[in-house]
Image 1 (cartoon, helix red, strand yellow):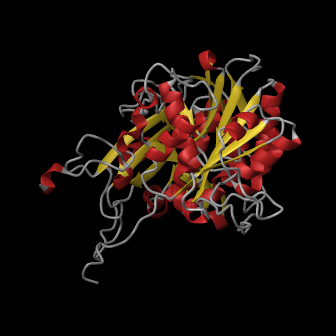
Image 2: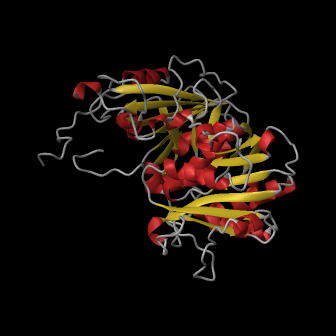
Image 3: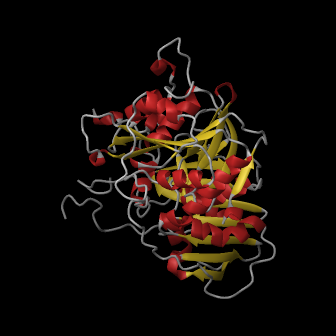
Length: 228
Length: 247
């Protein structure tokens, strides 16, 4: 529940197409890069950053070490290369869950070609299921690792506990690599009010990639609709 | 598109004599819950998984074993050799525009492996039930289905067709897959229950009890319900426990 009195449907259920009516084919045009460029020939690491927090970190932060390679503006997808490395980052946010597979098919050649894949996804802390009380924690980081371990498999973070699952492009990238017998890792950052808190672990990860994280701007607006 | 589907079969065995159960992602998710119960209770072994552009991707760790480090994805296939049973579990909805090609590929894959017959489990909106004092279950069977004579003997109620096209409101891809099975000469039984969204675990138990009339799923020596084991992943089906400091 985001606001007082709001009835929240589980996201999977609200995204479910109504099979009883002929579904409207919304936005089914084929995705294509804004600029016609050949795909990179060698990709050492392919990273996917999914979610508003990471999107803001990249867009508001210093992009001195990042070179914009290409973008797909209609789905808020941007691809950067980390200068001086052979690492590529795709940043993505706010896409329709039903578009996930179109995005994955679009990124598939890069996901197949990359030596190693890492996806980082931010999710609301309220989505994290655990029998243990969270106390005053503002963030929880968990991992999902493919059967074939990659270079980043020995992270200090525990693996995602059942029944938690991830979905979206991050889940698709891990699933595709698993089915191809290749390595990949997902870092899932459950964060409480990402607009107000800095997630130290995420910042440390960005620094490892030579990206300067930017502190979030505290919001002046009340988060509750109780008094508005 | 069928070339885009990646099927990872861990064993290439023939499935002659086996029945395949396929749950449709439908109102209340009864079919999927029933399959979860079967997989957990019969200690079924994963024999395959599939990656397809038709499936909304989900991934996590094995929902039937908290200590497992094996991944679980949108669509997986489980086998119980002792019961001649194969269950295809779906953990995400199919995308309509890709669904037919995926389901045709699914029918083809199991026809190649000589599957004996297919049972589709689904559900329909409770408000669609016209005769309120009757059983909430309905069935539909192809002429070649080995279960047809059994369900007739049990006096189960057959699906009433109101359109020329087969429609089960809220039933997801069930009717589409039933037609595809017919086109591929695969014997098929479709079983559904009228229900509403909510806690649908009791509906899943009912579905298993109904199914157990047709298939020798559990021992008849003891009560069926006592033999059903809920998967560990159902523990937090309704969210986290309330914070202790509110009391």
